[in-house]
Image (cartoon, rainbow, N blue to C red; front, side, top):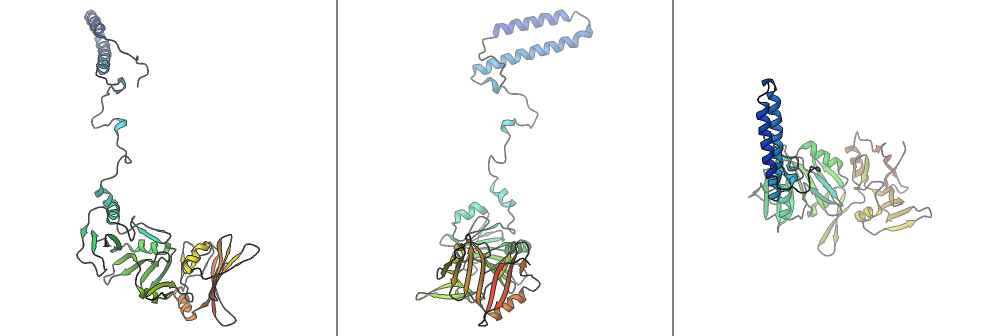
Amino acid sequence: MNKFLPPELKDLSDSKKRVIQNVTEKVEERSKRRKLKWPYTAMTAAVLASAMYFIFQVTVDKEDGKPASDTEVPLIKGEKPVDSVESPMDEEKPKDEREAALDLSKPTFTNNEGIFTVNGITVGAMQENVINQLGDSYSLEDDLDGSGADKAMNYDNQIIVYFYKDKVDSILFLDMDEEHAHQMYMDATEVKFMSGETRFIYSVETAQIIKMEYTPDGQLNVRFSQNDDPNFGSNPGFTLEQVGGNSYHIALNHSQPIVSFAKENLYLHGITLGDPEVKVTTYFGDAYTRNVKDDGETTLLYGDELEFTFRDGQLEFMSYLKVDEKYFNQVLTDFEGVDLYFAETAQMISTEHSAAGDLIVTLHYSEQ
């Protein structure tokens, strides 16, 4: 607002008439002078006329109840006033634009305490959540792929979301970008392993599983689901434990530690140095013996099979005390060309035999 305008504007009708009359008289008088001066006369008249129009317009606006600061200034064609320029944050993009911007072959993946989330959805989510994240440009799938689902939504043959009783049962990515999938696998800090060319990422906390598998025509399909296949327990590194009469639980096999690495850290069964005690007990249960030393060092012993040492609440040392030697020799063969030592984190996996001849595999810090 122009702070020099008076707070109230009086009726200027008479003043306007006198100004017009004075201007008219001066124009007539000056028109008698030399013609070379007429541009100055015209300019002066234009300025006075503009001033009169401004005063008149302000008066009308005031009478109409319109604030004086709202007096409009002519704009260049197509230009918007600064206050009316739309900001990208003012409103969301239309759904079709959001979907077009989403590269479904390169999904975003997060892992929060064993819950795998991909493009904002996870197993167990409701249908409305899927639509909010992926949009409504889907078709209902006729072939349910023997999944046990009762409905499936197909997004342009790139993502198929399977439902059972209105909740997400599994999420299948068709023809995922190989480089993107590889990076997802390498960055995963959960229990992960390969079986042939098929890769698995497994959550011990929630039993969710990611399966990356090639089709016969070379297409990489990636499925996110809840693992309820008891046959999964027959994979190396796992064991199927009976719980109660007819219930089974897939657990980690103490004699077959799965070796993996991510972000310059080495892992045995998805656990690395620096992890908190609660993660170890979540993975291996509470059937342990605790030993605490005077210097604050704490050791958890799982019978004669596992040993975990903590300092200041963080894992400093772990040993698998009775490892299947044939199994681990194959692991070392599979890791041929990979140094089981990371200088960046000073982590190392080493092996030795006990007095009884058992193979001991240890993950510890080492300055080589």
